[in-house]
Length: 435
Image (tube, rainbow, N blue to C red; front, top):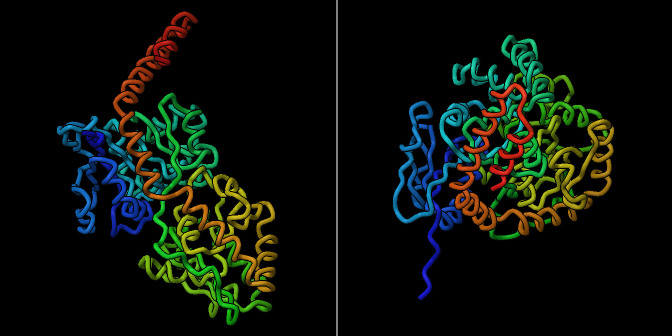
């Protein structure tokens, strides 16, 4: 009689609903498949979570500053334990995890390569140590890293400017045993900067049970939308300026849903640009409200500059609604098939946005094929089942990856202590690392 394969034990450290972050929602979306593929425990440093998650697996609270490796329960018949820690760029949800990975051997799930905003805000709010930040920047980026760190901490260099030269993801790697990325750019960056094992999986999203209508209204105002955590790099100001340029010629409404980095400033810009009657900032909304809005949208703005190798859970949600999105022709977004999104160059962003808006006003159906192709890609490449299988594979490799990471760090320490490492020593270490 055949027996079912033994499942790896996975400790999943992540924000969880009702946290207002897509990383928490992403965990909830894949939970049935992930719990089926692994022996799963969810961990969070938040004091509360959606109790419905416990239908699938245990949920436990951790202390990022007191948790030790032995505190992740072991035992049973699984294939060892693997601790996955999720790192995004919001200090509210990831400051504790950033501290945790300085001490705990773990698999780093990189949702953002550029984490300078996380570091800056965490330090300002006494959630991360400035000395640890300085040391990490100097270690990974040398004298220039030390200069950038000093400028950020003194308030002289904005985090986005620092991130353009030094994304900062390396600060998550001191005790890492491997790295999981969601885009080729992030995967290549981690491979280039570290000898740690790296893995690449497409970001998952559960397609809705019914395929949404691909047709949008043919009468009334055009409906535009933008959503998610909207920081300065999401190009909201550029979108508002383009809309202002066409407001006399095109009838439209624009819904902004999610947390805007400075809502008072953006509201002022809306008024200055003459868009008060056309644009509404809703703040964070529940997923059914968001999905209903996307189902009606003729165009969703999903621009990024700078982009630092991150994938977009927002784009997956847009595809799920069979909606058309406009993206910056950069990074992961630029790598998407042309038939699945509208792409515009950052260098000619304003003119390209205005041209797209006018084209859409002339023919509302130009986004239909885009939305259809996006939905097909979502179903083929981004399903929770496919992702859960990948996570189980990474977890099974964790014990071997931990040994490789330890050997790599030992080798690096030996080479660093040698003033003039001999070729024979380097070759011997290289052979060990390859084994």
